[in-house]
Length: 67
Image (cartoon, rainbow, N blue to C red; front, side, top):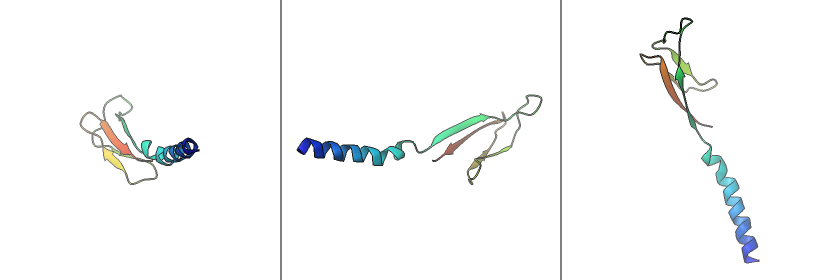
């Protein structure tokens, strides 16, 4: 009986803590124009949020996301 209670509590803890492990990632890339040249200073925003960044001199960007 004690093992059953322990396993039930363990499973509940795992299920409740699972969303915390998938909270966020990093998106990176390069912005280029129609000729394949990097776009310097382009704004990159995550749609539906206020999170964003600006590309560097090579057109590269990196932004953190949260779920």
